[in-house]
Length: 291
Ligand SMILES: C[S@@+](CC[C@H](N)C(=O)[O-])C[C@H]1O[C@@H](n2cnc3c(N)ncnc32)[C@H](O)[C@@H]1O
Image 1 (tube, protein in one colour):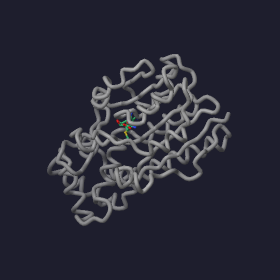
Image 2: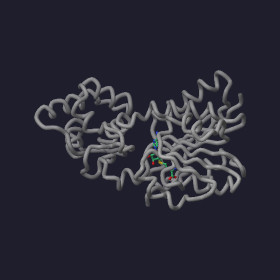
Image 3: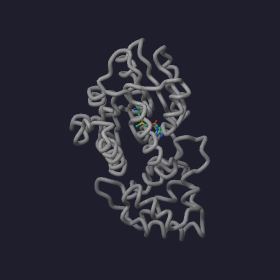
Image 4: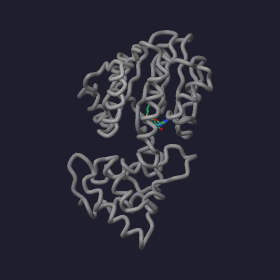
């Protein structure tokens, strides 16, 4: 399975898509949500699917050759210029399903998961030049500690950064196993619910792909481009991401441009989590443009 879409019913219910609407799926992935969106908008609607990873898009293009669908390889941070380029001034609904697809963790061989032994790459867009190994081998000890702390709340961030800098003087980091062994030295091998390497890997992926800035820019542009009455839905997968979305929504609500539909984020049912363990940390927030 390349990817099992999460919170599908909740997204469809809250976006309330109608025939003929213009909808953007900013994280197209394997099109799990978009398949339903495309059915809802019908032939008079338009679905714009954005995906930054060409390897993902190349696997789904054939299945989504539809008259109401346009797929674009791009970063959603460039949403405003993508829409301008298509001469679309306003949209009705927009979805962000953040992070990575199961494909990235299980099959991409880019070192996004700590489970295999893969090159320390982590780029979701392979046309970019900075890889995880570049950051690990070249960033200062303080920069590394800040990445681990700010992007994943890793409380042993400084000790891990120090261990990395000590080791790289002798031998550069090339593979995920090199990094895992340093983390285990500091955090130990035992773990409860989460693996000791989870946070460092998450933080590094966020840094490599500049994910937080892309989210801030993309969600701001989404709100700007929505028609009055239009809705934005965002699914996040960890606390830093969810905090970011909550704050962006709050500041837009404070100036009266949106109404927050989900006072508390919507989370998956126990049944969904049972069938798809990766959905367990998903949180859905929805807002409506009012001015
Ligand atoms: C959780 S998956 C989406 C899954 C999709 N909703 C589905 O049901 O198949 C996130 C996808 O968004 C892509 N992505 C993440 N950040 C992006 C960005 N800034 N711009 C464009 N695509 C992005 C990833 O490459 C990944 O394929």
